[in-house]
Image 1 (cartoon, rainbow, N blue to C red):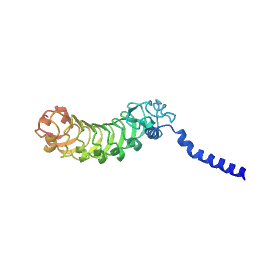
Image 2 (cartoon, one colour):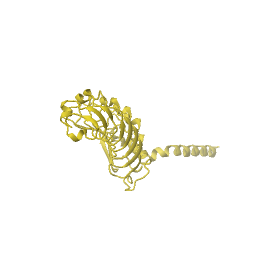
Image 3 (tube, rainbow, N blue to C red):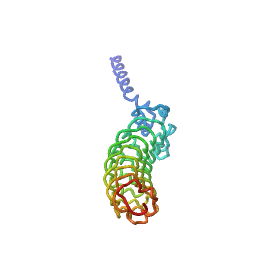
Image 4 (cartoon, rainbow, N blue to C red):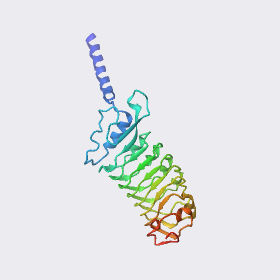
Length: 265
């Protein structure tokens, strides 16, 4: 009887250990696990940039391109939270994984000058702390997600030189902290948002798209007079509004819009 009880106990302990083993072995914190899911979605990494991204570490803070800040629970692996992921010019091939936007304290995401494709996930709206989103010079396509306006702290949005289509979301005007907006060299069409209120804008580049219609006087008045604006290589028509913002631009900012007229052309 004693032997049977001992066997049952050993059997129970063995299965309990099997259940607990993954937890015991998994030292990596939650942000690190999330980043590994991004790594495993990458189809090509010819420079082996992500080679040192491993489960063996407690935190991802020493990984290439990762910057952490002490924000979490003291004296735990979660004390160090990922605040920046900066991997430009790394020849990475893959899609923009939705998992990236589940890193709650992410403030800078720079994946520019790579070979990312697919769409920009709606989950981008989840990272409310994001200040910089730079995906320029990739092959990201589809429409710009309207939910990006929920990222209220966004200061720089660079989606230039991709394959985005559709209209510019009107609710981009909700991004009151935006200083740089670069949507140039895409396939965007439709009209300029008439109620665009980029009160903090310093640089607005919508060149090399398929935007049509007139430049609304309301649009021209709401963009700050000190901002640099580039609307060249579109399908804009009609007179350029005589507002300080428009008059302060160079001729090249309006070039190659065959139906456009007025100063500073």
